[in-house]
Structures are given as structure tokens and as C-alpha cells.
Amino acid sequence: MFFLIPGTEEAVNATTSLATKSIFDIILSSGPLGVGIISIQVLLSFIAVWIFIERFFTIKSVVKEDEKVMQNLRANISSGNLTAVQSICASSDTPLARMVEKGISRLGRPMPEIENAIENVGRVETFRLEKKINYLSLIARLAPMFGFLGTIMGVIKIFYDISLTDNLSIGVISSGLYQKMLTSAGGLLVGIIAFVGYYFLTMMLDEEVNKLERSSIEFMDILHAPAR
Image (cartoon, rainbow, N blue to C red; front, side, top):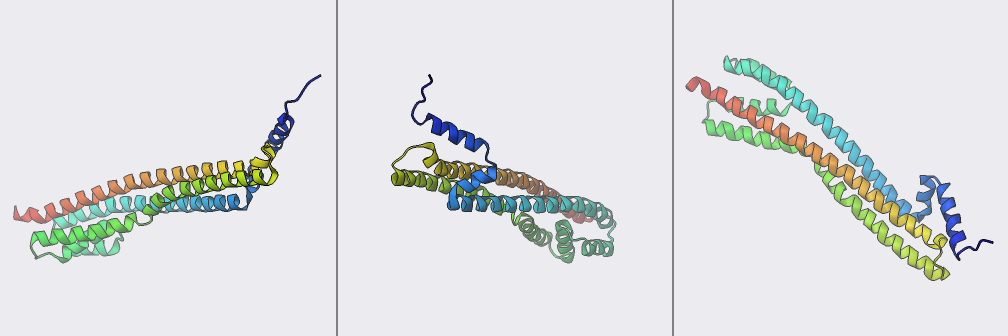
């Protein structure tokens, strides 16, 4: 004859029931608050992925276009063909083209003034490229906080259910545990995705800013060349 430890059969039945549930069923089992927090985390993950994709292709296209623009500008500036340079800048919607165009418009003025004008445009263009990227940093911080909120609410739900039933069985506390674990895991996952995306885009942006600085230095060197 086999003897069952009290509560063992109930625990086995709960485990078997959990094994047959889909992840969607488990999410629903976490209660309205848990579903709400998880829905917010899913929304944040979609926003993070969208920002990453949009900024990635924007920065990548700017890098490629700036390289082409610089190749076209180099020969024309060296030969003094300012009309061609202005035409290239006007037809190119890139940070480098706008920086060079601002420098060309200041020709005839002191070199420090030309350099300062180019740097000002460079700062504006850098801000344009990095916009939205900081939202990834915000999501990376915010998502785990929602997870922590779900954890606290899950613990509160566990004790509340116990107080109503005066029972410590798995069936009573499982709903709160689902909410606690799912929201914590969801928050960490979304936070990791957003953080990795933010770090990767920041590295891309730093590389592009460095290229813009080198190009502006080269442009100033070309302007100085006739005087040497």
C-alpha cells in the first residue's frame, strides 16, 4: 500500500495542469493586474524594437551617403569649383553636406568663424541622429520596474488569497506566483533587449560623429591649403 504525503496529490495535479497549459493560459492565470503589466511590457518591447530598426537603418544610410558626398566634395573643393560644391550640398540630405554648405556660406570670413559655424551645425546634426535613441535607455530602466511592481503585487495577491482561504496549497498561491514570475521575467527580458539596442546604436552613432569630425577637419585643411 502506498501512502501519499498530505498535499502531494494536490501538488502533482497542479504540476500536471501547468504542463498542459500554454504560455497564453499561464499569462491569463496571473490575474487582471498581471495581464495588464505584461501587456505594457509587450508594448514596450515592440516600441524598443521599432526604435532600434528605424535608427539603425537611418544611421547606416547616413554613413553610406556621407562617404559618397565626401568623395564628390573633395575633388571640387580642391579645384576651387565652389559652384559644384554648393550644388552637391544642396542635392544631398546628409549631415556632412549641411556642415560643408554652412562652411561654404561663411567663406571670406575668419577661419575660426567658419570652423565654429561648422561645429554648430555638427552639434545639431548629432542631436537629430541620436533622437529616439534615449527612449531605449528609458525603456531599459522602465521595463524592469514594471516587473518589480508585478512581483510586489503578486506577493500581495498570494497573502490575500491565503487570508481568504486559510490554505497554503499550490492551487491557492499559484495565481500570485504566476504574476510574480511572469512580470519579473518579462521586465528583465524587455530591459535586456532595450539596453543591448541602446548600446549598439550608441556605438554606431559615436562612429558616425567621429567620421563627421574627421571630415570637417579635412574640409578645413582643404580651405587652408591655398594659403600654405
